[in-house]
Length: 97
Image (cartoon, rainbow, N blue to C red; front, side):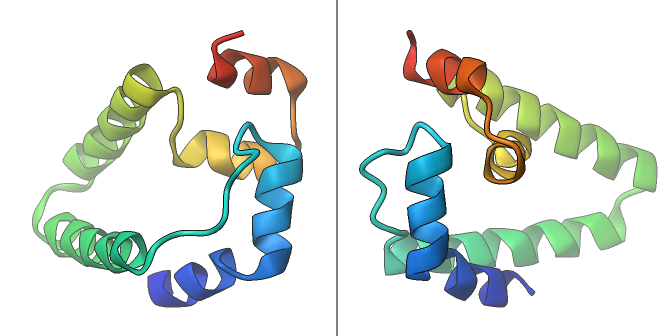
């Protein structure tokens, strides 16, 4: 599923949507290294989630989302939100405006 998303994410339609709906104005798609890393990290997360209690998996996902939000003003939740329902306030906040 992750590999399929990486292919879809790098189609011109999705790249154009990122440019129009998010703060990623100069986005040209992911590099091969980035896409490969995303697939490997997803596999590692899946492997880890199989071995951890559900509650700990949920806590880790929330913690990682919050760390990314704090550190770089971006995370999976914001990406999905902005692709489905763009919000100018979020764009301004992500740009540091």
